[in-house]
Image 1 (cartoon, rainbow, N blue to C red):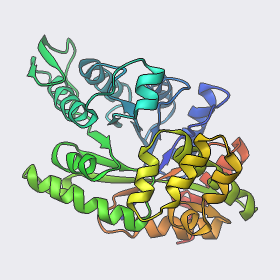
Image 2 (cartoon, rainbow, N blue to C red):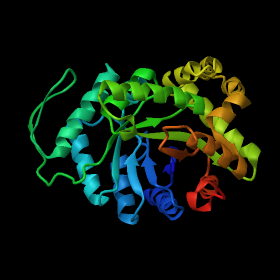
Image 3 (tube, rainbow, N blue to C red):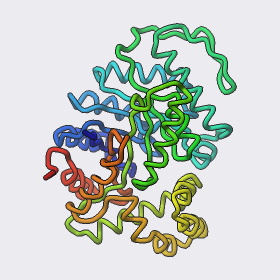
Image 4 (cartoon, rainbow, N blue to C red):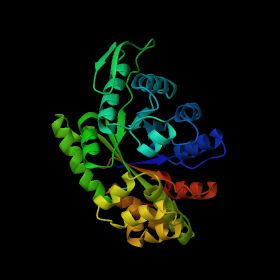
Length: 336
């Protein structure tokens, strides 16, 4: 049976308490894991620590923290500490993010994101083993580091995000899980083939790599409002957050990805929104009335190889709309 997770809202929230309350609601609704993205708001570690103290059974994870703003050794320390605080419920989600974030926000050179992700995973695993870390790579060279606390048992899984074929292949080869985003059900199927190829290169069973698909969801009685929020969210990410989301759409046969991106970059928000076709919205998101949203989530859950679908919320949704969507798509309230 496919798990159903929650991505906590990426947009600004009034307080850490409000994020913890969403997590508590997710636990009460039967969701399997609460994922917290780290963007330009509160840091993920502090918020997840608070959530760990206020929940009991739901898994907790980062989806994602980037592989640049913290060193691999620190990421390993953080994962070990959060695993302790969460009493074994933590999952570390990593990803390189993109130049818009890494170079503009953090002032670091983006370089080779795939190599950096691979080496980060390898170093984090060494840290979590509790053994002395001696590592020589192209991106990192470490010697003599060792945890001064007990190594976590079990060690938390180390999962990575990826959108392109090579990034997903890397996940299959080295990581414990792959986080997908900006993909239609058919797009997920194509990328799972990349994951399986990577698993083969790493002499691994692809079933050992957990596949989590993030889907933008909005389930409201006002179906038009739900679709409007999903369309705004899609246009913003494709148009304003670098080229990866645009390229992911074009790779799946949606040439309007180019139009959305170009219009947004030119400051023509109206044209960018108009370029998000109804077909694209229906294939990419689960937005509309509750029944429609549940049906579209189920299409992703039916993809062979998907282990979890993570319910994500449009960045423009308010608290009432987030709570309505979470309630409508909660496993414990699903009519199916």
